[in-house]
Image 1: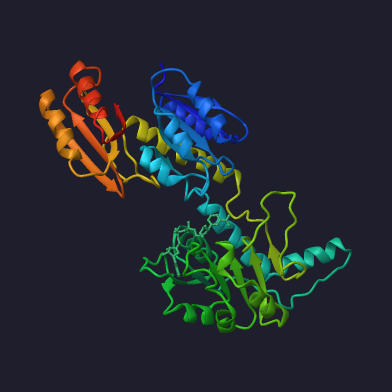
Image 2: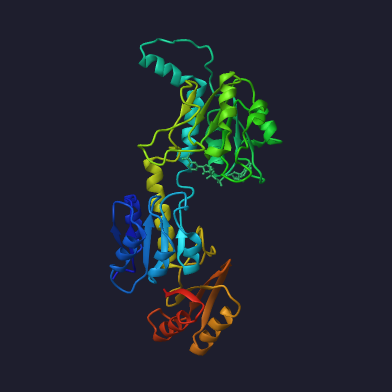
Length: 410
Ligand code: NAI
């Protein structure tokens, strides 16, 4: 019998199957997405009294109905970056852990930005387009090496710091601005302020999240601070840059060019037209939000999320979960077992659990508790094998407490 069943939708990368199979999970696949009712039916059809897991990408919306309908469902993997398609609060209230893959495409974005820095600096796109039209625009004017130039990185997180390392390897000087203090990698140094970064950089590249503080953070005033002939790159989130202000700076040739991967409004599907004020400018590289879209990133997402699912299944660790307390526990001791209990976070839960433990007369070897809003996660290690009737009875007693949401024994 498998340890669990996983239903993977939306053609999730094969690396996920391999990783889950290694954890003893029976993997079932479905190429497209599913609506709630289909998903509930598909989960119900999975056999046995073992935990269930679901893997989705961005197309499948998972609502409260799914979490409430299937008590065997313990975990959901979002094999993508965003989790907007999931009712995370409902998952939390049902005790279902959700994992995503926020960093699997970091390298892909950093490489794209580095490529764009070189392409912009050498005017590759307008010259290539000219060649396609049969024109021979051979000239050194306006083309530069990137060695010795300054790249200003706004947002020195995973992508920003990765870019910092590879830009330095080309001989670029790196400065950065972040709202939290960050360790400078290599010879990079923090700029005194955003304004100082804008004034000093030949290339300004944005790697901040979409927050109320970053929306519109690069507007007319900030663009006016940039060096004449500098370049702006945005592969972060579309609303960070004021596009009309950017267009004006490009029209007036205050900026030499830009590379934009993300937009305030993006087509929802490939058939929908792409509308942008930046279309038609040959010094602007426009890409369709593909910064993180590589086969390597897809494979990495498959591994990252399924490793998190497997670790939760085998050990109970929730590190990286987006909706339950993050608890990192060591693998189970030989001859011991572990009860994983997700419960409503109300007064008296721990004493009720500990009463059940005391009544069972089982020795506890470790206990971890974490809470988040209205839900708590309790991990109890026992000095008994998981097949021992006393351990099973105790698990049953804890599962039966009115506060318990999801309880299982490893
Ligand atoms: P991260 O969370 O690792 O780093 C973001 C950094 O921005 C953090 O260091 C944070 O402190 C900093 N920050 C936040 N607010 C700031 C502000 N107001 N001013 C200055 N710094 C600020 O995120 P990661 O993984 O590096 O991603 C960065 C961005 O790239 C995100 O918006 C993400 O959505 C986007 N992204 C785009 C992709 C694409 O396909 N184009 C693919 C992957 C990520």
